[in-house]
Image 1 (cartoon, helix red, strand yellow):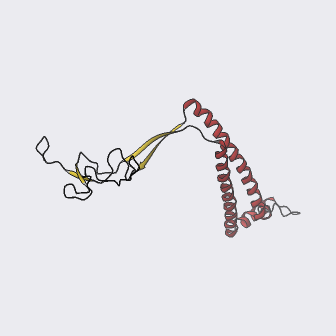
Image 2 (image 1 turned 60 degrees about the vertical axis):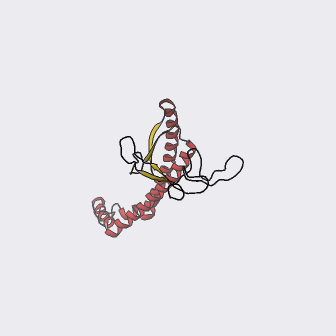
Image 3 (image 1 turned 45 degrees about the horizontal axis):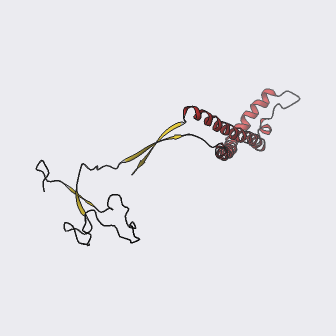
Length: 188
């Protein structure tokens, strides 16, 4: 068999369901008919010497996988879900801040920064009657952790409130301009 240009067409094997039908679909009348190859004889014989497969002409088939893309729009952000997520993320950030402050204090104490700087400050601020400002007692670990904890709690409240307010403002602006458009791609 030759095409109009006198060349032999290339063929590929097709083992899927017929067009417009699902594989293994139940036919009208309630009888189940297993899927058969496109163009295969209904008697269960072979077509072209192959069992369950028929050769179809190849028409410029792609060799690279196709990427599906979809353009989506974020039309609304639910303020309640934004508040819950921002609350959990700000708590995690607060815990990281407290741990980082404790580690930084321990490293600086092990390096002798507080004793060296504290000695210099007490000499500069001291007189004959007093020893001057004691930096080591002022920057003790419990006091630093207490101050960091207060800052972390304030950050949790502010970040949660600002994120929730941001969701409300986004919903208002998305009503006017349509929201943020995203292009999502899926590799097959």
